[in-house]
Structure formats: structure tokens, C-alpha cells
Image (cartoon, rainbow, N blue to C red):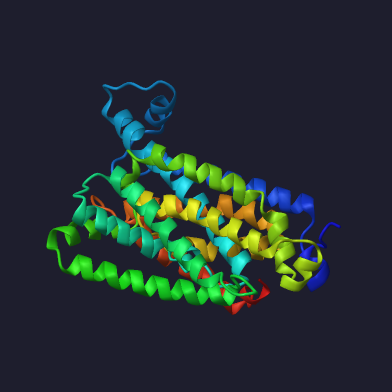
Length: 346
């Protein structure tokens, strides 16, 4: 028996499919414009013709083309991957937890990745960001397994409330251990503080390491729309419709770890994207996760790339890290959504 659409139960109106498809196409065009701007705009002016040549007919002796080819192109690719990962991860977490304030940090992903990066720096003498990627990914996985292991026992399994409590407890515990390690070692602290501020600039050499994880996670997340729609009807209704609720939660949690663990390890903790973008997508599409997921996958990298561009130009010749700019830009639409009471329509 196919599950009824969430709007059929909640009575919430949604836009027609042609309108939603047109909106998604428009969002893709915005993302494409953000990619072009990310390649063309920076602390150093590069003519548009040089940008095109760097992509289509690269000349390794031209300084402007070197800047585009070796710095801005990997940075743009990192923005696309990380943005899509955080947007999809946040949507999965809000759908599974049925909590409008849920984000990837709810599973302890950020705190676990941070702790393992600190251990890698302090105990394994890691100095390359490639090493940080694998440490961060392992930490995110361990933290998520710990959260799920704590919340799963019991007849009802890992309910949203148990996941939230276990996630908050794990985040606090791992954060305390991280602080203790960092404060006891000055050298570790000096390296860690540069990783802690989320940025796309250092991802140039590590995009290839994280890309397979994020691509696999993105395909899996985009296929979860119907599962989340059924889960949104409530656990009892979902079970009555034949859904294995525990298995769906475990699948979505695993995909979130895959997406956000790789993204956090690649660029450091970037907060707010995974929280605010699903709300923006939901305000456009309504409650149908078959549309919320692709909208989030497109809008999140657009927000991240635009934030990165702003960070490059507002403090020339230096730059403001994207993690800081994203939090400032994301706060405005989030407050507007809260005031419009869209958050309550999860």
C-alpha cells in the first residue's frame, strides 16, 4: 500500500509539480551563477577571458590562469560538495528526528570529528589536511555509533527524544575532552584553531579524498524522500503502512554521518547550513521530502559559495572564513522564517 502524501494528512497546501520543477531549475541557475562568481571573484582580479581559458585551454605559464586552475576551481568544487552534503544531512536529521532544530551536530558529528582531529594532531603528529580528513571522518563515525548505541536499547528503539538527549550528552562529553587536550598542548592548539574555523580555502588538495563519500551519501539521501514522507506521518502510521521505522532511522543516520563526516573533515565545522537550508527549502516546497531533499542539495552549496565570495572581498587582501560569513547570512532568513512560523510546519 503506497503511503499517503504528508499534505493529505496535514492539510497543508503545496505547489504544483510544474511550479516546483521550475523553482528547482531556477535554483540550479542560481547555483550555476554562484559557481561562475566563485571562479571569477576574489582578492585578486582575474579577467573573465582568463577564467574561461583556465577551464578550457589551461596555460601553466599564465599567473591568472594558475590562480583559477589551482586555487579557485578546487575551492568551488569543495563548496559544491560540502554545501550539498550539509544541506542533505540537515534535511535527513530533521526528517528522522521530526525536530525543527535538528542538524548534523545532533549526532555528535562535529564534536567527534573535532576530537579525532585533535588526537591526530597531538598524538600522531599529523600536519597535512589529508590526515585531518580521515581522522575527522573516523571521529564522526565513532560519535554517531556511540549516540545510536546509547539511544537504541529499549522496545521503542532510537526515538527522536532519545537521539536528541544522547546526541547532546555525547557532544558535551566529547567537547570537554577536546578542550582538555587542546588546552594542555600549545602546539596542538595552534594547529587545531585553524581547522576549527570552517573554510573552503584549504580543501584544494583533499577534495578528491572526500568526494566519493559525499557522492555516495548524496545519492542515498535523495532516494530517501518517500521513507521520510512516511515517517513524517508518525511512528504508528508508518508502522501500519509497513515501514520498518528503526531501519529507516539507522539508514538516515548512516547517510548523515557519511555526508557530514566527510564535509566536516574536509573544511572544518561549518554550522548553520544544515539547520537553515532545509527550512528554506520546506518554505518553498511544502512538506514533501521528495522535493525538500533536491532543493536542499542545490540551495545549500549556493549559500555556501556566496558566503565564501563575500568573505573573500570584504577584508582584502585577507579574507573572512566561510564558516563565519555563513552564520551571519543564514541568521537573517532563519529569523524571518521563525517569525513567519514556518518552522512549526515541519
